[in-house]
Image (cartoon, rainbow over all chains, first blue to last red; front, side, top):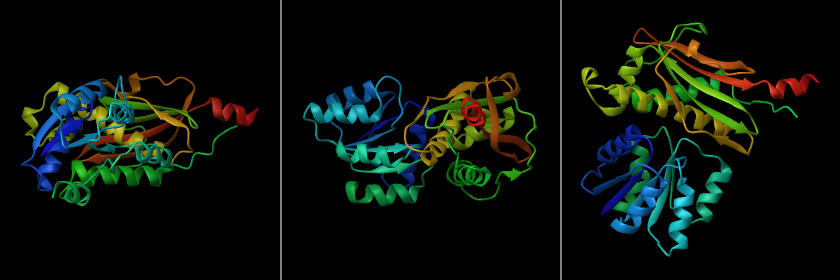
Amino acid sequence: MKILIADDSRVMRQIVVRTLRQAGFGDHDLVEAADGQEAFDKTTAEKPDLVISDWNMPGMTGIEVLRQLRAAGNDVKFGFVTSECTPEMKTAAEASGSAFFIVKPFTAERFDEVFAPILG
Amino acid sequence: MSVEVEVDENDLAEMVEQVWEAYLDPEGVSPLMQTYDENQPSEVHSSVSITGSWSGHIVYSSSRAAAQRAAAAFLAMELEEVSEEDISDTLGELANIVGGNVKAMLPPGAQLSLPQVVLAPESSARYPNTERISGVYGLWEGEPVSISMWQSSTDTKEEGA
Protein backbone atom coordinates (compact mmCIF):
# COMPACT_ATOMS: atom_id res chain seq x y z
CA MET A 1 0.00 0.00 0.00
CA LYS A 2 1.03 3.57 -0.53
CA ILE A 3 0.74 5.98 2.43
CA LEU A 4 0.99 9.77 2.16
CA ILE A 5 2.16 11.63 5.28
CA ALA A 6 1.27 15.34 5.25
CA ASP A 7 2.75 17.61 7.91
CA ASP A 8 4.49 20.96 7.65
CA SER A 9 6.86 19.85 10.39
CA ARG A 10 9.73 17.79 9.00
CA VAL A 11 10.49 16.31 12.42
CA MET A 12 6.87 15.26 12.86
CA ARG A 13 6.86 13.56 9.44
CA GLN A 14 9.94 11.65 10.53
CA ILE A 15 8.31 10.71 13.83
CA VAL A 16 5.20 9.49 12.00
CA VAL A 17 7.37 7.42 9.64
CA ARG A 18 9.34 5.98 12.55
CA THR A 19 6.17 5.21 14.52
CA LEU A 20 4.67 3.46 11.47
CA ARG A 21 7.80 1.31 11.35
CA GLN A 22 7.66 0.61 15.09
CA ALA A 23 4.01 -0.40 14.74
CA GLY A 24 5.00 -2.82 12.00
CA PHE A 25 3.87 -0.86 8.95
CA GLY A 26 7.32 0.05 7.66
CA ASP A 27 7.04 -2.08 4.53
CA HIS A 28 4.47 0.17 2.91
CA ASP A 29 5.43 2.75 0.31
CA LEU A 30 5.70 6.06 2.20
CA VAL A 31 5.32 9.44 0.48
CA GLU A 32 5.59 12.83 2.21
CA ALA A 33 3.98 16.23 1.70
CA ALA A 34 5.14 19.42 3.48
CA ASP A 35 1.93 21.46 3.30
CA GLY A 36 -1.74 21.22 2.43
CA GLN A 37 -1.41 22.08 -1.23
CA GLU A 38 1.32 19.48 -1.72
CA ALA A 39 -0.84 16.96 0.13
CA PHE A 40 -3.74 17.63 -2.23
CA ASP A 41 -1.53 17.53 -5.34
CA LYS A 42 0.31 14.35 -4.34
CA THR A 43 -2.89 12.59 -3.30
CA THR A 44 -4.29 13.36 -6.73
CA ALA A 45 -1.13 12.48 -8.65
CA GLU A 46 0.24 9.53 -6.68
CA LYS A 47 -3.06 7.96 -5.64
CA PRO A 48 -2.05 6.75 -2.16
CA ASP A 49 -4.26 4.20 -0.39
CA LEU A 50 -4.12 6.16 2.85
CA VAL A 51 -3.47 9.80 3.80
CA ILE A 52 -2.23 10.64 7.31
CA SER A 53 -2.50 14.40 7.66
CA ASP A 54 -1.70 17.13 10.15
CA TRP A 55 -4.52 19.61 10.77
CA ASN A 56 -2.78 22.96 11.14
CA MET A 57 -0.66 23.59 8.04
CA PRO A 58 0.19 26.81 6.17
CA GLY A 59 -1.78 27.59 3.03
CA MET A 60 -4.36 24.83 3.11
CA THR A 61 -5.25 23.10 6.39
CA GLY A 62 -5.73 19.35 6.61
CA ILE A 63 -9.51 19.60 6.77
CA GLU A 64 -9.49 21.81 3.66
CA VAL A 65 -7.39 19.20 1.86
CA LEU A 66 -9.90 16.52 2.81
CA ARG A 67 -12.88 18.63 1.72
CA GLN A 68 -11.27 19.48 -1.61
CA LEU A 69 -10.42 15.85 -2.25
CA ARG A 70 -13.99 14.78 -1.54
CA ALA A 71 -15.33 17.65 -3.66
CA ALA A 72 -13.13 16.39 -6.50
CA GLY A 73 -14.61 12.91 -6.10
CA ASN A 74 -11.51 11.45 -4.45
CA ASP A 75 -12.53 8.83 -1.90
CA VAL A 76 -9.08 8.01 -0.45
CA LYS A 77 -8.98 6.84 3.16
CA PHE A 78 -7.97 9.97 5.05
CA GLY A 79 -7.40 10.81 8.71
CA PHE A 80 -5.68 13.20 11.06
CA VAL A 81 -2.65 13.18 13.32
CA THR A 82 -2.76 16.44 15.21
CA SER A 83 -1.90 18.05 18.53
CA GLU A 84 -5.33 19.67 18.55
CA CYS A 85 -8.37 17.62 19.27
CA THR A 86 -11.53 19.52 20.12
CA PRO A 87 -15.03 18.06 19.81
CA GLU A 88 -15.83 20.52 16.99
CA MET A 89 -12.72 19.45 15.06
CA LYS A 90 -13.62 15.79 15.42
CA THR A 91 -17.16 16.50 14.29
CA ALA A 92 -15.93 18.49 11.29
CA ALA A 93 -13.46 15.72 10.41
CA GLU A 94 -16.07 12.98 10.61
CA ALA A 95 -18.59 15.04 8.66
CA SER A 96 -16.03 15.38 5.88
CA GLY A 97 -15.34 11.67 5.79
CA SER A 98 -12.27 11.34 8.00
CA ALA A 99 -11.50 7.76 9.00
CA PHE A 100 -9.48 8.41 12.18
CA PHE A 101 -8.19 11.03 14.58
CA ILE A 102 -4.85 10.51 16.34
CA VAL A 103 -3.70 13.03 18.93
CA LYS A 104 -0.07 14.06 19.39
CA PRO A 105 1.80 12.91 21.35
CA PHE A 106 1.04 9.39 20.13
CA THR A 107 2.57 5.97 20.66
CA ALA A 108 3.26 3.00 18.38
CA GLU A 109 0.44 1.18 20.23
CA ARG A 110 -2.01 3.90 19.19
CA PHE A 111 -0.83 3.63 15.57
CA ASP A 112 -1.27 -0.13 15.69
CA GLU A 113 -4.79 0.21 17.09
CA VAL A 114 -5.82 2.66 14.36
CA PHE A 115 -3.93 1.32 11.35
CA ALA A 116 -4.07 -2.45 11.85
CA PRO A 117 -7.70 -2.61 10.65
CA ILE A 118 -6.86 -0.34 7.69
CA LEU A 119 -3.49 -1.72 6.63
CA GLY A 120 -3.90 -5.31 7.72
CA MET B 1 -16.47 38.67 29.41
CA SER B 2 -13.43 37.11 30.88
CA VAL B 3 -12.89 33.44 30.26
CA GLU B 4 -12.13 31.18 33.16
CA VAL B 5 -9.05 29.25 32.11
CA GLU B 6 -9.33 25.67 33.13
CA VAL B 7 -5.75 24.72 32.31
CA ASP B 8 -3.56 24.69 35.40
CA GLU B 9 -0.03 23.58 36.31
CA ASN B 10 -1.16 20.00 36.79
CA ASP B 11 -2.69 19.87 33.30
CA LEU B 12 0.44 21.34 31.77
CA ALA B 13 2.60 18.91 33.75
CA GLU B 14 0.50 16.00 32.46
CA MET B 15 0.88 17.15 28.83
CA VAL B 16 4.61 17.55 29.32
CA GLU B 17 4.83 14.09 30.85
CA GLN B 18 3.06 12.63 27.82
CA VAL B 19 5.52 14.35 25.46
CA TRP B 20 8.41 12.92 27.46
CA GLU B 21 6.91 9.44 27.48
CA ALA B 22 6.13 9.45 23.78
CA TYR B 23 9.18 11.16 22.31
CA LEU B 24 11.83 12.48 24.66
CA ASP B 25 12.14 9.69 27.20
CA PRO B 26 10.34 6.61 25.87
CA GLU B 27 12.46 4.35 28.10
CA GLY B 28 11.32 6.26 31.16
CA VAL B 29 14.85 6.85 32.39
CA SER B 30 15.22 10.66 32.23
CA PRO B 31 12.00 12.48 33.04
CA LEU B 32 11.75 16.25 33.46
CA MET B 33 12.50 16.90 37.14
CA GLN B 34 10.41 19.85 38.28
CA THR B 35 12.26 22.72 39.98
CA TYR B 36 9.28 25.09 40.28
CA ASP B 37 11.72 27.88 39.41
CA GLU B 38 9.98 30.16 36.92
CA ASN B 39 13.13 32.23 36.53
CA GLN B 40 15.41 29.49 35.34
CA PRO B 41 17.56 30.50 32.37
CA SER B 42 16.97 29.59 28.74
CA GLU B 43 18.96 29.90 25.53
CA VAL B 44 16.30 29.05 22.92
CA HIS B 45 12.50 29.13 22.83
CA SER B 46 9.43 28.55 20.71
CA SER B 47 5.82 29.60 21.02
CA VAL B 48 2.35 29.26 19.59
CA SER B 49 -0.40 31.82 19.98
CA ILE B 50 -4.00 31.03 20.76
CA THR B 51 -6.75 33.48 19.93
CA GLY B 52 -10.52 33.36 20.34
CA SER B 53 -12.25 31.96 23.40
CA TRP B 54 -8.93 32.45 25.21
CA SER B 55 -6.05 34.59 24.02
CA GLY B 56 -2.41 34.17 24.87
CA HIS B 57 0.78 32.24 24.19
CA ILE B 58 2.25 28.88 25.05
CA VAL B 59 6.04 29.11 25.32
CA TYR B 60 8.58 26.27 25.36
CA SER B 61 12.07 27.29 26.37
CA SER B 62 15.24 25.45 27.24
CA SER B 63 18.99 25.50 27.16
CA ARG B 64 20.61 24.84 23.82
CA ALA B 65 21.90 21.50 25.09
CA ALA B 66 18.37 20.42 26.05
CA ALA B 67 17.05 21.50 22.63
CA GLN B 68 19.82 19.53 20.92
CA ARG B 69 18.99 16.48 23.03
CA ALA B 70 15.27 16.88 22.21
CA ALA B 71 16.07 17.05 18.48
CA ALA B 72 18.24 13.93 18.74
CA ALA B 73 15.38 12.11 20.47
CA PHE B 74 12.75 13.35 17.98
CA LEU B 75 14.85 12.40 14.98
CA ALA B 76 16.49 9.28 16.42
CA MET B 77 19.93 10.74 15.78
CA GLU B 78 23.18 11.05 17.65
CA LEU B 79 23.65 14.38 19.45
CA GLU B 80 26.55 15.40 17.22
CA GLU B 81 24.50 14.82 14.07
CA VAL B 82 21.84 17.36 15.07
CA SER B 83 21.77 20.48 12.88
CA GLU B 84 20.51 23.98 13.60
CA GLU B 85 17.46 23.22 11.45
CA ASP B 86 16.76 20.05 13.44
CA ILE B 87 16.80 22.06 16.68
CA SER B 88 14.56 24.72 15.21
CA ASP B 89 12.01 22.24 13.82
CA THR B 90 11.96 20.27 17.07
CA LEU B 91 11.37 23.38 19.18
CA GLY B 92 8.52 24.41 16.89
CA GLU B 93 6.90 21.00 17.14
CA LEU B 94 7.23 20.93 20.93
CA ALA B 95 5.39 24.26 21.22
CA ASN B 96 2.80 23.01 18.72
CA ILE B 97 2.13 19.79 20.62
CA VAL B 98 1.73 21.48 24.00
CA GLY B 99 -0.24 24.36 22.44
CA GLY B 100 -2.59 21.98 20.66
CA ASN B 101 -3.23 20.06 23.85
CA VAL B 102 -3.90 23.31 25.73
CA LYS B 103 -6.27 24.44 22.99
CA ALA B 104 -8.22 21.20 23.31
CA MET B 105 -8.96 22.09 26.94
CA LEU B 106 -10.22 25.59 26.19
CA PRO B 107 -13.81 26.60 25.44
CA PRO B 108 -14.83 26.14 21.76
CA GLY B 109 -13.75 28.84 19.34
CA ALA B 110 -10.00 28.99 19.97
CA GLN B 111 -7.53 29.17 17.06
CA LEU B 112 -3.96 27.90 17.22
CA SER B 113 -1.20 29.67 15.28
CA LEU B 114 1.70 28.00 13.54
CA PRO B 115 4.77 27.87 15.82
CA GLN B 116 7.42 30.58 16.04
CA VAL B 117 10.98 29.58 16.92
CA VAL B 118 13.66 31.92 18.24
CA LEU B 119 17.17 30.64 18.86
CA ALA B 120 17.63 33.17 21.65
CA PRO B 121 16.65 33.24 25.33
CA GLU B 122 12.99 33.49 26.30
CA SER B 123 13.90 36.70 28.13
CA SER B 124 14.55 38.28 24.71
CA ALA B 125 10.87 37.76 23.79
CA ARG B 126 8.17 40.24 24.63
CA TYR B 127 4.52 39.33 24.81
CA PRO B 128 2.83 42.70 25.22
CA ASN B 129 -0.03 42.96 27.73
CA THR B 130 0.31 39.42 28.92
CA GLU B 131 0.87 37.78 32.24
CA ARG B 132 2.19 34.34 32.98
CA ILE B 133 -0.64 32.31 34.47
CA SER B 134 0.87 28.86 34.60
CA GLY B 135 4.06 26.95 33.95
CA VAL B 136 6.09 23.81 34.36
CA TYR B 137 9.77 24.39 35.11
CA GLY B 138 12.30 21.66 35.39
CA LEU B 139 15.63 20.09 34.64
CA TRP B 140 16.08 17.42 32.02
CA GLU B 141 19.35 15.61 32.56
CA GLY B 142 20.50 18.72 34.39
CA GLU B 143 19.45 21.15 31.63
CA PRO B 144 16.67 23.73 32.11
CA VAL B 145 13.34 23.27 30.28
CA SER B 146 10.25 25.44 30.84
CA ILE B 147 6.74 25.37 29.43
CA SER B 148 4.63 28.38 30.31
CA MET B 149 1.26 29.85 29.51
CA TRP B 150 0.84 33.61 29.04
CA GLN B 151 -2.62 35.16 29.02
CA SER B 152 -3.40 38.35 27.14
CA SER B 153 -4.50 40.88 29.70
CA THR B 154 -7.51 42.17 27.75
CA ASP B 155 -9.56 39.47 29.45
CA THR B 156 -8.45 40.38 32.95
CA LYS B 157 -8.85 44.09 32.30
CA GLU B 158 -12.45 43.58 31.32
CA GLU B 159 -12.95 41.54 34.42
CA GLY B 160 -11.73 44.41 36.58
CA ALA B 161 -13.66 47.05 34.66
